[in-house]
Each structure stands twice: as structure tokens, then as C-alpha cells.
Image 1 (cartoon, rainbow, N blue to C red):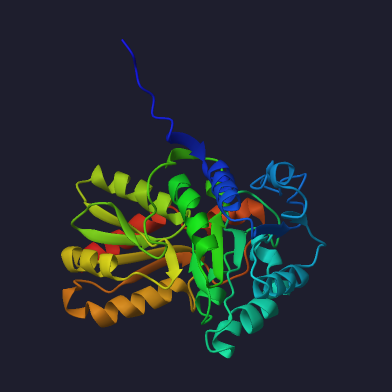
Image 2 (cartoon, helix red, strand yellow):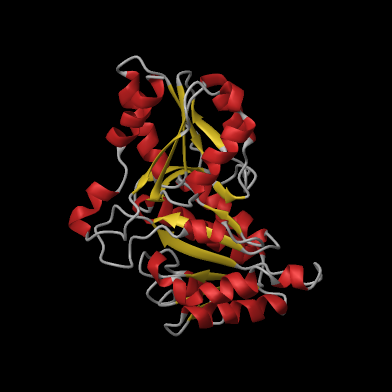
Length: 332
């Protein structure tokens, strides 16, 4: 008896999926370049680019100086010359020295040139907590960039999405902020190497439910799935929506879910004040007001700087905090 093995469906962690996606994009397009601090021989702090310099050479996988503004500025110039640079920011909290280049130049050059100049630049940003790191290494700065017109912002939550979304981001002619939830780098999941990608900016229902809708992006999707599983043991049916894209946001699957359940809880690791969660809450209240049976509730990090590692469990939302919000929503 011959047993066929599907070699196109592989189980791997998100870190390896990103590496495979970058390799595929580089193999398909010789104008795709990788840039960042220690991404060459070392393969980056999280080894996302491991082995790529040896395979594609030092001219396509560039170790840069420790200067985020210089990395982004160089990428802008390369994009002007027809290249597709992919920049790695070593940690989320290190992105601020490059903030001016991103928001004042990268985000605006296409509009400034009335569409005649494309900026196909991807900026990879490991972000979020749950790794016990020190100051400047566990932040969630995505709202700054989702707010900035001219930038696309996305965040995968699974290895399969990471594999496909990084390739779609590189293929985009617009600049893309690619937020990678670093706490999800190591858990494994199935990756369909021969499948087709969902649209880069499509949100997706990842668990069906009837009593309330939970929505999040990145690592928080896993927390919501844990909360939904716990709620099911008490007879509460929760629907979970993976946002996937932060700018633009694909609202239709979310609105359809809210019209079914009548309740919405938005969760994120970032502080709640003026955040992606705030925007979702406001938009759903505007567009699905008569379907809501309770106010839209938000579960987030607190509006304080990210605390020392030993206190991160108190700062970061967990399943219990999500379920407490579910209880409040169901009490209306």
C-alpha cells in the first residue's frame, strides 16, 4: 500500500514561515532586497532571515549600521530606483528613530508625485509582549502607523498567514508596515505552500459563535480563541474575528458578525487610548448601531509605559480579562 504525503502542507513556526515567504519572494524577483541590523550572517535577533544571505549574497541581504533612520532613508532611495526593499526593525521600540522617514517621506512620496512614483517598501516590525524582555523591546506602536495616510499596516496571527502575507506585502506597490507578533514566532501551525493567499487586507472569522463577537489582531487572536474555548464550557458561544489588516480595515465580516451576535469586544495589547481598538469601536457603533444589544467594549493594555518584564502579565490582556468584558456585555 502506498501512502501519499502532501509535501505542500507543512507544519512550522511563524519564524520559519516568514523565512520561507521571504525566500520565495526573493527567488521570484531579483529586485527584492533585505536590509537590517545583524540580519545577514546572524539571521536577525529572531533568526527570521537565517540562511538568506548565504543563499542570495551580501548585495541582496544587507547588514546595515545601527541607524533606523538610515535604513528607512536608504530604502526610500532604493524604491525610487525600482527596487523592493524589505527593512527589518530589530525591536518594536527601536522604530522611533526612523519615524520621521516613515511618516514624512515614505508615506507621502507617492501622493506628492501624484501617483507617478511608487514606494514598494516593506518594514518588518517584531512587536508586542509575552517574551519577558526589557524596556523598548515589548511595545505595540501599530496605532501610529495605522493612523498615517499613505501606509498600509498588517499583522498575521498564524504561520500560514505569515507565509502568504509577507509575499503579498512585498508585491504591493505601496509601503507596508508588517507587524510580526514576536510571541507567536515559535508556536507551530500548518502552512499550505501550494495554496493561494487571502487578500492582504481581508479580515476573517476564525471561530463561529452566536452570543458575542470578539475581534483582535496578531497575538491577541490566540488569547481570544482561548477565551472562546473557556466560555464554551459555560454554554456561551463566542465568535472570533482575526482583523489581519489594521489599515485599511476590512469591516464587512466584522459588521456581519456583530449584526448576528449583537455584541462586540475589541482586544489588543496596545494601550487603549486613541488606538486601533478605539477606531473599530467607533466605526461599529456608527455602522451597526441598531444591531448592538450592548455598548462596544474594549480590552487593552493600560495607558502606561510597558512595565518591567516581571509585571507584564498584569499589563497584557489575558483570557480572564476578555471574559470579564464578555460578562459585562451579556449583562445588558
